[in-house]
Image 1 (spheres, rainbow, N blue to C red):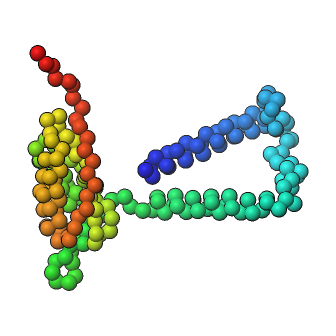
Image 2 (tube, rainbow, N blue to C red):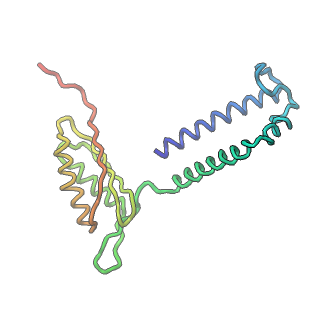
Image 3 (spheres, helix red, strand yellow):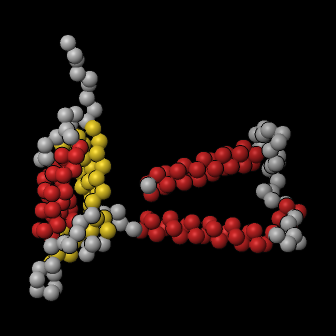
Length: 192
């Protein structure tokens, strides 16, 4: 989701800057601009003194400005924190029994889960991503199903096989998983 938000925000900011910059550049170069355009000469300013001070004496102006700026700051902080948050888990803490624990690479566990899930009957491909905390990981599994596959059988095999093996081998009490199923694109079969 964050990549979609980033692309939309970047696209909107680029479009606004392109339109405004092009219009101001056209005015500054003395090119002909539409009659409704507020700037019409090389010496024209973006905001006149009257425009800058028009709402200063109104009682609602400053609370509105402060509220809008506060919302923008909160949105900017949310965006920054979303950028800094890692999407995937880099390591999982495994209880080794000595009280210290051992670290298991997240990619290794993801690979083992994906290999075992991909070997299930009716599964064409499997992709796994670990999220959450290193003491309480969560799995996001995407299964690409063959046309003949039964989703219930594949889910049962995944939960009783790959996820159970990963949970016991990593010494985790639980390994919650979100599973998304998608069918392989295939041509319709001919019926004679």
